[in-house]
Each structure stands twice: as C-alpha cells, then as structure tokens.
Amino acid sequence: MTWGLTGVSVTRGGRLVLDGATLDVAPGGIVAVVGGDGSGKSSLLAVLAGLLAPTAGQVGTATRSRLGFLPASSGVYPDLTAAENLRFAATVHRMGSAAADERIRALLAITGLTAAAGRLGARLSGGMRQKLGVAMALVHQPDLLILDEPTTGVDPVSRADLWWLIAREAARCAAVVLSTTYLDEAERAGEVVVLDHGRTVLQGAPAGIVAAVPGQIRAADSRPSGPYAWRRGRSWRVWHPAGGDGEVIRPDLQDAVVVAALREAEEAGDE
Image (cartoon, rainbow, N blue to C red; front, side, top):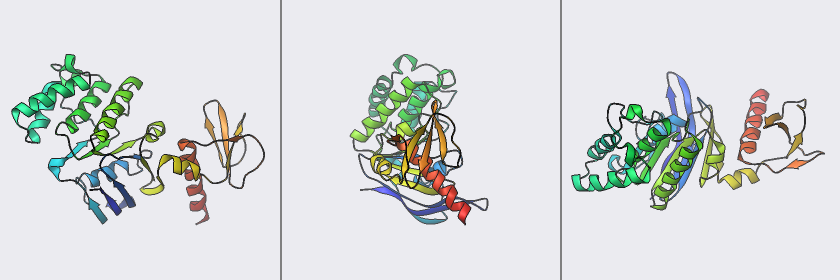
C-alpha cells in the first residue's frame, strides 16, 4: 500500500500555491519535502492529510483513523499537561483506556518527557513541545505519519531526538512524509521533493539528485563576478554549466538545490 499525490495543484485566493505536485510514500519510507517560506510545503502536506482540497490532481491517503498529523504549530495545547495532551490525542483516536495508558507511558519515556508529564504545555521548552507534538501524532501508531517542519526552531539535541523518533516509526513500517528547511536532515530521507513557488524543481533519492547536478561546482576564495556564485561558510562556490578550470568541489544536496534555483531563475529570465 502506498500513499501520495499525482499531479496535484492548489489555487488559493486566485494564486497557484501548488503546481502539479507528485509524490509516493510506501510503508517504511520517508519522504522529505524541502523549500523556503511560500514554497508550498504546508499546502502539500495539508492536501495529503485531507485538510485541504486540491484544485486538480489525485490524492491517495490513509483513513483518518490511520493517519497521524503534526501541524507547524506543534499542536500542543498550552493549558494541558504533557500527559493530558497525549491522553486527549489517544481519546480522539478512540484508544481504549488500558492501551492508552500503556502507550502514553511508553511515549513519555521514549521522548524523555516522563519527568515533565505533569508540566503544562505552555511551560515546556520548544524542543520538548515538538517532541510532545510528534508523540501526539503517533500515539495511535498510524500507518501514515505527516509532520510539518517537526524540527524547526529546536536545539541540535532535540533535533537528533526527533529524528530518532521518526526513524523508529519508519522502522515500524509507518510511511512518513515531513517538511523541513534543513537540507542536512533531508539527506536522511529516502526521497526528497524540492519545491519553489509551488513547483517541483527537484525530486528523487538524495544521492541521485546530487549525482545529476549538471556542469561543475568550483571553489573561490573571494566573491566572484557573475550570476552563478553563492556563499558557503567562509568561502564561495561557483557553478560552471559547461565546466572550466580550478578546484572542483563534490556537490552535496544544498549545492544541488542552489544550482536548481539558478537554473529556474535563468529559464524564467529567458521566457
């Protein structure tokens, strides 16, 4: 059983926010949707979760009882304790009392939130709220887990903990679709979908996307002239579509995304 989108477009307020998006995710798979603000990430996840109707295209998703969803806001209720938030999520999914008790105890332990079980959501740290939000989304062990930027704004340790939770669910054979602004995280996924203004500019396995970068990327100590340069750390990188002279850099996913954006801008300028 696979879930996903086929040629899905969404128009909101007369503006095309998603343009022909397609993705598939199978049990045990992780798909990362990458893009900046306004790229269409949240709209894509909302369509897959059944929260937003597409203007065109087809959607294949799990039934509501077998779907787990984490909104960008974490979904944690500030006036409920951590344990009460999990209890509420379990009740929504009609879990029996005994099963819910066991699952809540396990999730509090797995997320390191046992000591904070009685703390109000409003008094949890950002990382703790995100871990609690993910735990709420997976309390009923869903077949399809959809997470909207689960690690944005949290510390590196909490990010690692959250990815451990995500990998654990995939190992349980849940299908996972998540959005992220962190390209180093996206490299952990089996498939990456890169969006720009609603359009898919790159899609595939991270290694395949990197291997398909055209031309060459070369290093520069100072800012070079021309439209194909960008800064990485303390140095600069330059994309040479037809190759050239100088030190060649082996690209990573971030380089591939930058090159794709440069090519999109070039093609848009030619229209």
